[in-house]
Structure formats: C-alpha cells, structure tokens
Image (cartoon, rainbow over all chains, first blue to last red; front, side):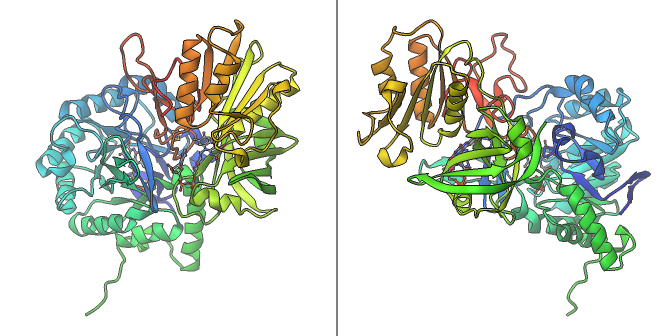
Length: 304
Length: 266
Ligand SMILES: Cc1cc2nc3c(=O)[nH]c(=O)nc-3n(C[C@H](O)[C@H](O)[C@H](O)COP(=O)(O)OP(=O)(O)OC[C@H]3O[C@@H](n4cnc5c(N)ncnc54)[C@H](O)[C@@H]3O)c2cc1C
Ligand SMILES: Cc1cc2nc3c(=O)[nH]c(=O)nc-3n(C[C@H](O)[C@H](O)[C@H](O)COP(=O)(O)O)c2cc1C
Ligand code: FES
C-alpha cells in the first residue's frame, strides 16, 4: 500500500483533494484523519479572498458544480493560524497554492517556505475555473506553466506538484511543460467547466453562471486525461476525479496514476479515503498484487 | 462534537398532507443537540447523488431525535418510505442553535417546511414554562397537524381560511401585535419559506424587535469544508471584506442569523 513520490513515503496512495477536506481538523470527530495517505489543503492565496456570492454550489446528476472562488484567509493568516494545526497531523501534508499572477504564487510560496512547517510539499493550482481576474489562466498556457514551475522549483526542495486542468485542448502539452520546468509530479484533474440552469426561473444555478463540475460524473473524463498525460511524461501522476469506490482507485492506477485524490465524495463520507484504503488492500491480496507499482499504467489495450 | 451515527427508524408517518415525521434512535446526536440545530442525512446507503439532505431536528431526548419534512424531491421521497427498523446514516448535530429566549417574550413563527426547528423551540419553551406565542402558517388546513388554540397563544393561519386565521403569518402578527404594541423584551424567532421570513424580518424592523431567522441554503457537507452554503451578510463597518466576513457559512455561522446581520433571506 505504501508509495513513494521522490523521497517521500506515503502510507497509502489515497490523498484528500484540495478544497474538499478543509485543513484536516474539521472532520476529526468523524474520521481518523491520520489514516489518509496525506492531506492536501484548500487553496491558499497571497491575500484573503471572500469568494463568490451565493449560490456557489448546485447538485447535478452524479455530481455537483461549484464556484467557490477560492475563498480563503490569505497566506499571512494561514501561516499563523493554519500551519500550527497542520503540524499536529501525523499524516503527510501538502499545501495547495493558488494565484492569479506569477508574483502572487511566488510570494505565497516564499512565505510558506519561511515557516518551517512539517508539510512535505506543494500542489500548485494553475487551473481554477472560478476566478476571473488576472488575465490568462496559467493552466491553459504551456510557456506560463513552465515558467511558473521553474520559478517555484527555485524556491523549494519539497515536493512540487502541478495540478492540471481538463479545460484545455491538449493536457499532455501542459503536463510536459510542468515536467520540463522541474515538477516532481502532476495531478489531474481539476473540475470540468459546467453550467446548470433552473428552468423555472431561467437563472443559472450558480451566481457566476459557469462553475466546475466534480464527482462521479467526471470520472471518465479524468481517466482519459490521466492516461493521456501518462503517455506523455515520465514523472508520477496523481489521479483525481469522481472517485467513490476502491475499483475507481484501481482504474486510475491502471490508467497511469501513481496516487489518487478523493474530492467531492468526502462531503458525503468523510471517512471514505480510509475505508477505501482497507478495500484496496483487500483487492491487492485477492488479486495477488504485491505493490501499487504492479498496477500503474497496466491497462491492456484491445489488440487489433 | 459532531457524530456520524446510524440512526434506527422507530416511526415514520405522514402527519399532514405530504409532510412526514420520522423518529430515530440516535443516542449521541440526541444527547448533544440543541433546538435549532440540524442533521445531514444520507437518504439511503446506495444514494447516487453526491449531497446529503439537511434537516432540522424537531425534537431530541431519551436517545431519540425526530425530523419533520416535506416530500419535495428524490431524497425526501426515499425518506418518506423508510421502513421501521431501517438504519440511516446521520451526521450531526450541526450548526448553531436558538438563543436569547430565556430573557424575552418569544414570538415564534413557522411556515412551510420550517416547522421542525420552530416546534422544537415551542417544546423547550413549554417545558421551561416560558410564556410565548406560536404562529404557524400553511396553504390550507390539510397541511396543519395541531389545533388552532388562541387561548394558549397558538395561532394557525391558512391562505384559504380553511383553518385558523385566513392570511399569512405576518397578517396574524399584525392583527395580534399591532405596530407599537410590543412589550420591551419581545423577540421573534422564525423559520419558513424565504419570502415569508423576509416579511417577518420587515415586520421586526418596523417594530424595532430583535429577530432571529433560521435560513436554508444548499449544502454539500454541512460541517464547514465545502464553503458552498454561503449567506451574504451586511458590509462590515471597517470596510474590509475578506474571508467569512461578508459571506458567512450557513452550516457553521448559521443556520440561524440575526435579521440585522443579513441582506435577505432569499
Ligand atoms: C439547515 C437546513 C435545515 C432544513 N430543515 C428542513 C426541515 O426540517 N424540513 C424540510 O422539509 N426541509 C428542510 N430543509 C430543506 C431540505 O434539505 C430540502 O427540502 C431537501 O434537501 C430536498 O431534497 P430532495 O432530494 O427531496 O429534493 P431535490 O430533488 O434535491 O430538490 C427539490 C427542491 O428542494 C430544493 N433543495 C434541494 N436541496 C436543498 C437544501 N439543502 N436546502 C433547501 N432547499 C433545497 C431544490 O432547490 C428543489 O427546489 C432544510 C435545509 C437546510 C439547509
Ligand atoms: C467545492 C469544491 C472546492 C474545491 N476547491 C479547490 C481548491 O481550492 N483548490 C483546488 O486545487 N481544487 C479545488 N477543488 C477541486 C478538487 O480538488 C478536485 O480536483 C475536483 O473536485 C475533482 O475531484 P472529485 O471529482 O473527486 O471531486 C474543489 C472542488 C470542489 C467540489
Ligand atoms: S455546507 Fe459545506 S461549508 Fe457549509
């Protein structure tokens, strides 16, 4: 069940997805948070963000759309109020950073680096569909992705993971840009652009009209994207999108993921990642799989 | 402490037209909940949607809790068909609770599906022998399930006049407590359809009465991690609009908000 990313060993390949498990402590009454392979925290930005006006979420078939707008308390407060509680967790912590300009990303990372937190790495959100300002999104542009990765690489020796968006023409190109910029891994996917309309009122169900679709509805999109990236890069991939069962985890591994993250389904079952760790281990023993590596990318194509 | 526990259904009945009451054995949630709080419910173990369904707690005690709900969609239809003995995945108690009723003359106002937290408060006030007035609104008599008893300060209204007083809850408020005819310490507690609560809020403003409202928003988690259940608060006086100032979370900062705090109930 143990997996390694660079020199960091995780007790399970199952992590929480950013924005779907807070900072770990919110659910401690209901789940033994330390049983997760690791916790990826809600995106933090250079300055506090109030987020988008309501309504911010809507349920759709087998999923939901959201436009939270990266509401968070900003890196300064994060350093003082959140890092101490993250340091108390026994599991691995990866801090997710978001921004809208290069300077914001870099300053945020510098402040976090100066804090001597116990966190083992960073996941860089270059793909949030819900934030308007800042011009071009980093995650849709190869040069910007590479440049950002290079600059962040200069500033940390911890794990550096670039989180990719499915809302691009060729995700494999962006993944390659992250790889050549020096990322240790990529994670995929963030939410898929979506929209829902209330037919009675004719209003979009989200205040921002467009939002990000997540949950089981996006799993096939995520599997396809992970597999495309797997064929294009040599660094490990963390698969994300709609995971609800142990079989889903295996599917991501077969498509090429080394680890996975669980997002939306945590809301319904904050213990899911821990449950699936047990079920996955059963699957391994029933199918005589010794280690996770034996599954990674082992999808077998039809021969014709 | 938030518990996730399998509540055992011990009764599940239609108590009025399309309105159901379910009683669970749920010892942890029962012993730790306060009137006004809610539980977040997984309608069935093979529930295919991603969100649980939040429901206010209508009563707690003796290891039991109850909920009262209207069958409006997929989730509540499954709930209405729960069998006796069925185990249901519950998370709770969640959110804040009614406060400030001990030192006031409470007027409690409910309508539509906003019955549960109001009845819960009514029961607590009866138990604590706190003099108060209860006003409940519905469209017609079929949606009410207890009697109109003005002598006990329990007033029912119906849109069609088929039971109690014809009109809405604010019409009753105005007729029994005309503007300016309030004792100093009257406080209004209300839960119901957004339009109704906005009218109650206006009435409270006109009368300069303290007023707390239990709001409903769509919720993905119910315990503060999705940031989806936003309620807009009035601008902070210092002008610094930042995280969780202007946009409060109904599951943590609410569901009960003071009428002065918020922009609207809709
Ligand atoms: C804190 C809180 C307490 C609540 N307490 C009660 C209660 O005591 N009794 C009761 O009958 N209802 C209550 N509700 C509303 C209840 O959660 C919804 O009626 C329920 O989720 C509908 O589920 P459904 O699957 O049957 O309907 P769906 O098919 O999902 O939707 C039917 C309709 O209900 C609306 N709706 C869906 N989810 C919610 C939601 N979370 N909040 C408000 N409206 C929603 C939809 O917009 C739609 O118009 C409460 C909601 C909140 C947030
Ligand atoms: C309500 C919500 C908030 C999210 N917030 C963030 C965030 O702050 N940063 C980020 O990188 N991803 C965020 N995500 C995306 C998830 O981390 C994940 O990539 C996506 O939801 C797909 O996985 P899932 O289908 O398992 O949910 C959020 C998702 C949801 C549903
Ligand atoms: S419902 Fe998720 S934060 Fe309130």
